[in-house]
Length: 369
Image (cartoon, rainbow, N blue to C red; front, side):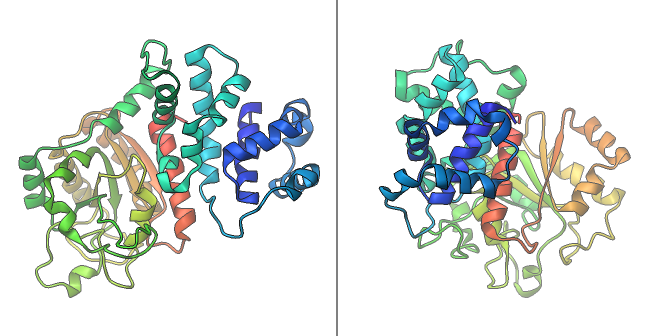
């Protein structure tokens, strides 16, 4: 772990520890001298475990903490995501302004952008480093000099994949006609209470009636599950796009909505490896060449640009796709295709942990780390 990553790790994890936003913790570290100590004593400190570090910080800041009103309610949740993304934000700022990483770190944490980034309600924790840096530069200068924003072509292409959203109404209806009985999109109606971790409105498909939603669809990223949910067994004449929008009380689709909301994954295409059956999560005995060919035929219908990104939901789907003979065929059909794995949302996993996993994956896919 670099010194920069260690500093942001300490800031963001202590942020959750005392439930104060990252910018406030940065100032606490800076004014107390702890920030300098993280650099001078890096060799000794970075080998400590997290619990030991938090205890050390508590003791070091005992006087300052007495003057701080600590929150009794959890307001800081996605610290792991910010701890991972912030170093790249700082490096890009450092390159853009030709300043040291320490100065870039200070300028970022003392900005309005960092304040908004730390605010859970903005959803910015799910955005890429480039997106956050763009907001920072606009705050500082009012415009962005693209020639100074230094990132490699591979990284820029990943950002372009995210930005190249939207499909035509005609294409949308054609995909619906052919695949709407088992596939869908990572778009869900907003919960009535505004609580995205709830199950409210999960099964509300009226979101697809608004043509404005077409601008949010991203066929360049495909989430791949196993098969249709058992909701199809109890629904008479199921409507298009029902899959992955299970509104039953036993449904787990709400975790996928919560995890993808506020990330570049929102609007992605979601489909199944097995399209002819309804089966339980974990049942994959029917994974075969016919499944592969059906999937390839379906993906060829999407108006996606290379390279296609496939997110396998669960280990069984990931293992099938990454078999040498299967993966080599995928690359023939989709040159440059990249395959990643995300835990299946029906697994026994806390929604918050699942959301953190998805947002870290988003950072890997779209920011190159």
